[in-house]
Image (cartoon, rainbow, N blue to C red; front, side):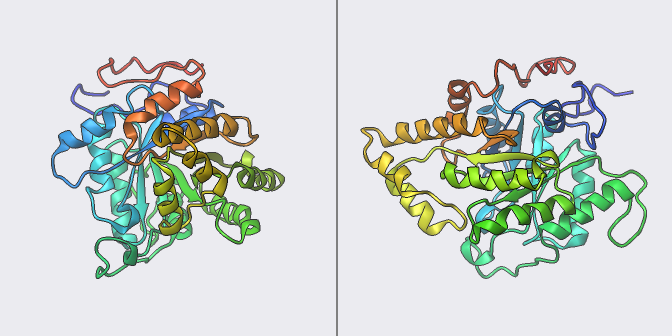
Length: 338
């Protein structure tokens, strides 16, 4: 029995098929074979929950789940577990990112239990950027566990119903486990095999770094298919609009792991309105990615352009006519998968 003041777990009313580990919306959408759309919310430098609600509202009706970042770029913001708590209670489907940079195994396991208790159904495991690249370079990094170890640890909590120490849980976290992937990090031929290691460790979905070089990504996916990984993990390549050629140059020089080919920057340079061209490039990328075998959705990272996500989703028709849940709808009004 559910009381009126209890939070509804997002996705609870969608069909639940064999093989599900969570009751969440994102897993149900992916396991139904539907092309999923996720996005990333920028956490505020604030203790005001209204700022979180305002940022999330930009994604209403256009994404299946929202990532709450965990100290992205080693910069300090509101915590991912707090953002997930606030937004899950509003009905949003959240992906809680967890970075091994800042927490040891005791803190991570406690956060996973707490998040699951609040209705969070998706956990994305990350090793985390070096503190040297962020706004607190004097901070002491933890790195007690990396992404692989974290995946195994949380999978053990869920499937074996025990902490990493072996102590039993009375109620395990029913979570859908994710990881990040970078198809563009050298050596390129190793990238699919690193994905295989993450799948073996427990990753059920992956969201990739920005895929501005579609040709390189197609080759990556060819090897992924040869390894049979596309049948073992849901793959959501990362996309996002670029603001200008200048910002694209800065990103590829200063942001580790982001590869932006010359032809993309030339296209921006030749545009009358570079910001609009950046949005169009993102739209074109999504259209190409949809046709690649083994791609199960897209992850839109629209840093400082979150207000353009709804437009991008509409112009690509990536939802194929699906109507997504929006805040304010009745609890039992979860749209059917089509």
